[in-house]
Amino acid sequence: MLKSKKALAIVSLALTLALTGCGSKTTPEPSSTPGTSKEPVQTTDTGSSNEVLEVSTVSPSDPYLKFDEGESFDKNSVYDAYEKDIGVKITNKWVADITQFKEKVKITIASDDLPDFLLVNATQLKELTEADMIMDLTELYNEHATEETKKFLTMDGGMQMKTATFDGKMMGIPSSYNPFQYQTLFVRTDWLKELNLPEPKTMDDFMKIAETFKAKNPGGTKEAFGIAVSKNPFSNETGVTGLKAFLNGYHAYENIWMEDGNGGLMNSDIQPETKQALAALQEWFKKGLIDPEFAVKDVEKAAELIYDGSIGMVFGASWTPAQLAQGAVKDGKVVQEWGAFPIPSADNNPTLNQIGIGVDEYYVISKKAKHPEGVIRLLNHWVQMTLNPTEDQKVYEYGKDRVEKGANYWLLNPLRVGRQIDNNGEILPKAIENKDESILETTDQKGRYARAMQYLNGDASMWWEILISGPKGAFSLAPEIQKNKQYLQNKFYGAPTPTMADRQEILTKKRDEVFFKIIMNQVSVDEFDKFVEEWKKLGGDEITKEVNEWYKSVK
Image 1 (tube, rainbow, N blue to C red):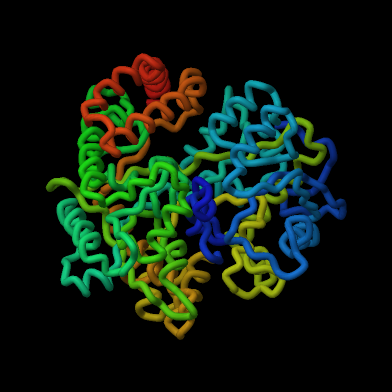
Image 2 (spheres, rainbow, N blue to C red):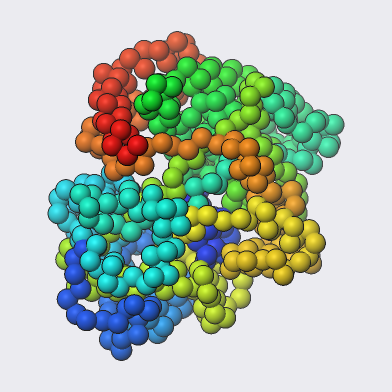
């Protein structure tokens, strides 16, 4: 459900995820949806001991989370429910704005001032393990996790769990999600109709539409552009301002490990196709189709051009319509019409969506935690609610009134793991089109169906759910992509290699610096070739060697 790479300023880390944890980490949906324990506590269920265990964590303050009057991170109905239902009292060591959250996590780690548990990335997991700051969870998890939880976290055959294992020790709980979440091209269909333009099927179509949108400026704004781009276009936290899907349309991929044709793996960032994609982006920039100030705009600032009608095409994850709703729905009316389309291809070969393995962040428990079993109680309870929810448990999704009101209360749940597999693309479009809720299978599907029905019954605030889950929504594109295997999955799923942990940040910074200069036409696209050589010398060759040694060991 969430994960997504938990998005930054965009919305949050998992928009498409509701309480069921079925989605990808990256931005919230306006709503929805081993150390050993020192005390014998009954946690083979979700916690039936009379003892209340206090556990501390740290939380991002998300702009899409709206508290009921009188509530806050210190006191709210979700935390109260955890204490009442499973005997776990949640406290926050600190709360930070979502745009500053990750930086503050770095400071917290560096100062050895960890809460009882927190969410970290793969590199931090490795660093904390090597620094002996977090618990080996093997025994704790085996003893206190329910069978239901263990099955839930190994639906993929255990691949995601392996990424949290070091020398046979379980050092973190994967914040899992379904990796088969695809990027989509969203286009202002009202503008296509107004300007008599065809739906985009190729990259040439895509550019021609962008040029027309800019020239005709159907939004009537000061200046129109072709596509929204922010200062972090290749990160996992870009929402509607990312360029990964653009790269994919040119058969280029952002920092994944792919087969090299000789039995080994190679990094996608330095392949010829990436140069071709950058040349295309440079052309877009020269034509004025990209905001010349994109390099200094964060996600929310860049996205304003979409909301105000200056831009009519964006790439994004399935949850993107929830973000588009900021401009599409005004005063209870839908004022922008958007459609969902597959990523166009630059040639006759189908576009392959790049995907990961469904985990890039982990919950870790400090070695200083007094009640680590409380964290496993939270995990068990979340899984139980995902699989077998009760009416009373809607409090964890909607707050104390248990009514959907777009407040994103689910973001208050401090430990969330998502389904590693879902069939939303097959079930939801049919159910919504036929108004047949009998085929719905999961809590997530039921929540989405309910919101879609609200929209069809006149509630414009739920417009975004139709564009996600409806007959022509983003989910509806997934079965065809899945069936034809039009995706490319990262082949590396091990812990960061030694050189990767030491040099990847430097390599990424260098890459972004060069790519930006190319896109902004400050240097020739041939500068890419120099970057490739520098990438290799700065540690890329050594990382490639280490990745291939790992690859041989798991074949």
